[in-house]
Image (cartoon, rainbow, N blue to C red; front, side, top):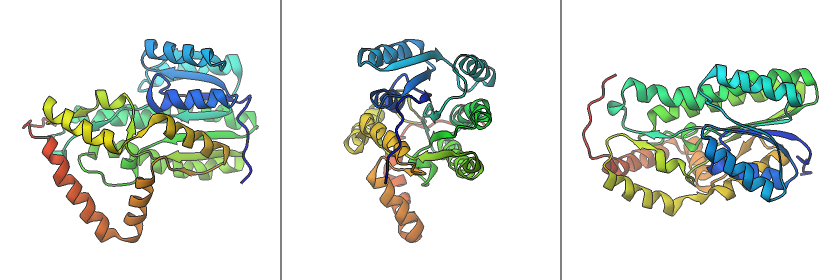
Length: 285
């Protein structure tokens, strides 16, 4: 398959302060993309910008943005569009992770991943895609969901609600944007080594159990730089589904072709993971 070049393209990346977002920005910069970057944390965003410029990459503009706020994203989008016109590539990476058994989740915990992961992505789609369509020059939209947006991962009810929403929305965007020459990609990473695990809330877990789980997670996780290479290569190859983790691809095949086995594996995994949530906590929905 012939690769398209992203050199010279204006590429907007959310969540660029760390993890997958930062590494996607670095890989894209090395491929010659002109970057517009956001992150919720100003210091981390500044560090990313400095690292990219030190490598000889081009950052056109960067600003810390609360993606859960429509007003903040709208103001950011207006500034970017006035300065540079429509972006060529929009990559929605930013998000949070939150784990917990459904009976332990209060309303705020159900709501938080929806506000940040799902509506954060919607805010950028709503504020940037109309300009891309109006510009009439095509482009590419990439939405990063999660393995928990394809699979019923144990203890992921609230997180999956946000990530399954991204999967369904991206499926429709592929159809709706095709007539405008805008390609769409969906990314569903599995375990990836990123700082997000340091801030992930695991409802009911003690600090000791969190550390035990982290060791298990790190053994199966891939480096975020590897995930970033897969994402940028997927853009260049115009792939709709971009896999970063081979094990997730296998699990999805099992889900679609051997559903009984899939349910058995997930229930077994759920029993194992509940060992890390030993503390009792009453949900106040």
